[in-house]
Amino acid sequence: MVDTDRIRFPDISPTTWEHPTDRAALNALRRIPGFDLVLRRLVGMFGEKSVRLTFKANAVRVSARQYPWVHERLLAVCDTLDVSEIPELYISQTPLVNAGAVGFDRPFIILNSSTIELLDRDEVESVIAHEVAHIMSGHAVYRTMLFILMRFALTRYPLAGVAVRPVLYGLLEWSRRSELSCDRAALLATQDPDIVMGALMRIAGGSRGEDLDLESFISQSDEYRDDKDTIAGIYKVLAALGSTHPFAVVRVAELRDWIDSGAYHTILDGTYRTAEDDRETPYTDDMGDAAAGYAATARRLVDEVGAKVGSVAGKMTTAWRNERDDD
Image 1: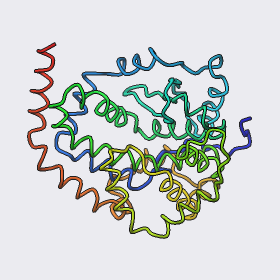
Image 2: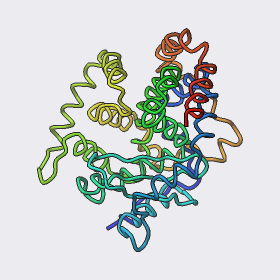
Image 3: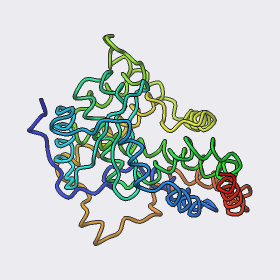
Image 4: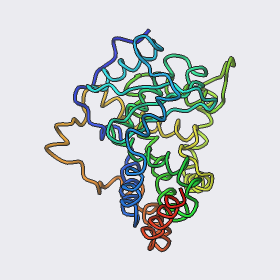
């Protein structure tokens, strides 16, 4: 059953939960030469309708009649986070445990079927809340861009893939940071750290029918928290692997850091940034804590790709025009 006694957050702004390095990474990404062109081209080639039809054709749309318990959890999350426009949610038959929020104008959520098979209902709700937060934070368009680049552009358009690879690496770097933001939102929606961290543990361990011990997994996160110097090496490994998500143990450690900082309980007590605050005082892009937490990485990212993308526009246009002419 859904906990009806949860604290609601009227008019809450996504900036309340956004991790400082999330926004800083996205700002660095937008500065990559050719980024805006890649975004426009992808939106023009695929578009909202095409992306939506791809999932409608091979997935079940959740409703009061289809997966009603999932629908109930979606409504509960949207009520807690004060989301007035309920996003569509689809369940797709896929063996990989994952979920996503995609789309350009009207983002929607995809839950892989393995996710609802592996996790209990409370943990599934935390995943739904995580994806709702991606939509609220405006992440869906960039995640869709990443999805298209990884699934289509690099395979169907190999020459264009070479040209847009720096943008892909920038998107992957940002994607990993954005996950930390939405883990926080999942905690605000469920209001139970064990649920969110338990979901991360089960996703990491793939424990169908196994009893796992959350305290032991938290001990793993302590090893990370006690050795912060390893973070640079961790993210280098992730970049080489092309991962869209940080390691689960890192996510647990980051979530615990946020709880220990007092920020989580402050929000529960009713002190948080609202959408009205954003309208009156815009959330600055160059926030101080973001600069402190990410500036060095952002500069390195831009330096590394800057020399490689001077001709990205020409390469993309030529490669895609030739591909279309061949068709």
